[in-house]
Image (cartoon, rainbow, N blue to C red; front, top):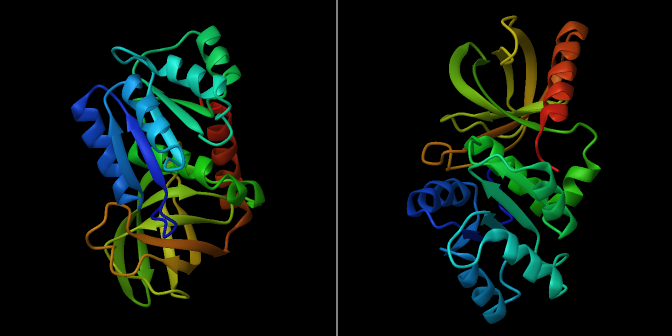
Amino acid sequence: MITPDSKNILLADDSAFFRAKLGETISEAGHTLRFATDGREVIEMIEKDPDWPDLIILDLQMPNVDGFTVVEWIKNNGLEDKLPVLIITGAYEPQEIVDKLHLHGAKGLMSKGFTPEQIVHRIHSLLFDNHEIKRENPRIPVSTSCEYKVKETMYSGYILNISMGGVYLNTKMDLPDNTVLELTFTLPTSTDPINVRGLVQWHTPGSAEKNLFGGAGICFSDLTNDDMKKIRSYVSDELKKSILY
């Protein structure tokens, strides 16, 4: 969830509270931010420094110039491939608005009801889309508590995303690469525990204690057929329910 490959993100929203809340989450994930309070500021910032943003996150409803107008301006200036746009909205949008946003080049649409795990997952899927395309097992965001054992000691943490191949474990412990552990967790749609052995593939050294998303990427090393079916079914259902395009 924390990336060493920091990107530049322009966040536009007229709510100071929302800018601070979302900005903190994005910063915790390792990215650099600039802020705008309406669409007019976004356009002015792009005109001044078009090479700076790697991603633009736009509130749809803003004063002066709204998010939809910004998306139109980006497309009319031939920048839709250079400047990916993720739309965020606090209201239900009719399908014709969603279709029009997509037609004008917006890369995604999310409700403001997202969790930190969901927004970071979506941002990274846009910023690092080539990585996601190459991924054999698609990941989905999730937030579920877990227990894990290293040698004979038990610890607790949270799983922030999951795939058929493994999980991202959010924990205050610093888990070096190649650490073997035993995980126990339940999926949000089930009460049956999943018990699996895993291996730390990578970790965020030194940041686990102080960062919201600190932890380690765990690769499953043995998974029963029954647990495999549960995870496959859950991942598949969540992908189908996604409102993201």
